[in-house]
Length: 453
Image 1 (cartoon, helix red, strand yellow):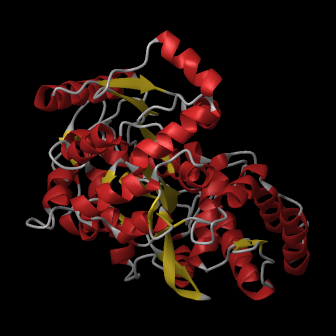
Image 2 (cartoon, rainbow, N blue to C red; image 1 turned 30 degrees about the vertical axis):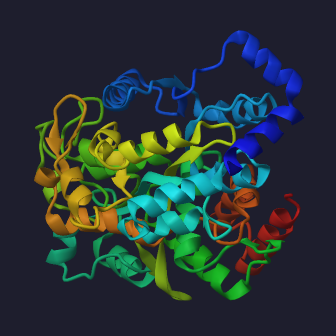
C-alpha cells in the first residue's frame, strides 16, 4: 500500500508526462523493464537468456534494455521526470547515493531484498558503500578490486615480503630494480589518463588520505600527504621514462621486465595466455601460463599513516526504481542473486567477483562456484585452474575492505568531480618532475581541490 501511494503521488506530480507514457503503451502488470550497462552483444545475450529463464519460472516477462554507461545519468533523470523509470537498474556505485537522495530509487524495497537473501551472506564492503537511512540504496551484485600484481617468484628468490605496504614495495624496488632488463615498478604518469587517477586514489587511500569529509572538501594534511607523494615519486622513478599508462605497464610485465604493476582483474585471463590480442611475451609461447604461475597479487596495501591499509573497489548494484512493479522487480533480483547468480557472474567472471559469498546453509557456495567459471576470449579456463586457492581468496577478499573516496562521508559525487578534473594527477606529476617541492605540492593540491564544487 505504501508503494502504491508513493507511485500515485509520483503520477500526479508528472501527469502530463505520464499520460504520454500511457498513450505509448505501458508495460503490463507483472512485466518489468531492466536497464543494464552490460551492452556488449555476448553479455547482452546472456542477460536475455536469464530473462527468458525467469519468465519460464514465473510467467513474468523482463525486457532487457541496454543503456550506455556514459548516458546512464541523463537517461535516468529524464525517465524520472517523465514517470517512466525502468523497474530494475543495474548501475555503478557512483549513482547509488545521488539517486537515493533524488528519489529515483526505492531504497526500502532494495533493503527488503537484501534482508530476505540474508545480509550476512554478502560481503561487508559493498553493503557499506551503499548504506542509506538504516538500509541500502540498492542490492550489491558484483565488484572487483584493483590489484598490485607482482613477480612472486622473484620476491621469493630475494627473500622479500609480499608488497602489502609502502615499505615492502620500496624494499622490493631496491632489491629488484635493474633497468632496462627489469624495472622495479611501472607506475602511470600520463596525467590525462583515468588510469593514473585510479591508481593514485588507491595509493592515497592506502595511507588514509582523502580530500573529502562529511562537510565536503577536507584539507589534506601535510605529513600523510607528503608520504603519499614521496612513495609515488619513488615508484615513478623505478619506472621507465615517458608518458606511462595501462598499456606500458601490461606490456612490460608481460615481457618479464617489470617486478610490480597496479592493474584491474581484467588482466587475469590475458596473463594466463587466453587472449590473442594481449599475449604474454615472457617466452616464445603466446599461450604460456608460465607468467601466471610466477605471479602474486595484493589487493589491500598500507601506508605508514594507515596500518590497516585499503583496497580500491568498484561495485555494481541492482536498484529498484521509484516507478517499479516492486513485487516483480524484487523477485527478479532475488533470482539473479540466488538461483541465477552464477549466470549473473558468468557475464564476465574476471571482472565480476561475487559480493554474495553463499547462502545461510552454504557459506562459500557462490565463491567456490565462481572460481570454476570459465574466463578468457580466444581460449577458456576457470580461474581456479589458473591460480592458486590462496590467490583466489585474495582476489575476492579485497571486496571485504574495499573503499572509495567520499562513500562513507556521503561525498562520492564531489570526490568524483575532483578525480575527473585531474588536478591530483597534474600536481603529482609536477612533484615527480621536481617542479614543486612537497610543501608546494600539498599547497597546490589543497588550492585546486577546494575550488571544486
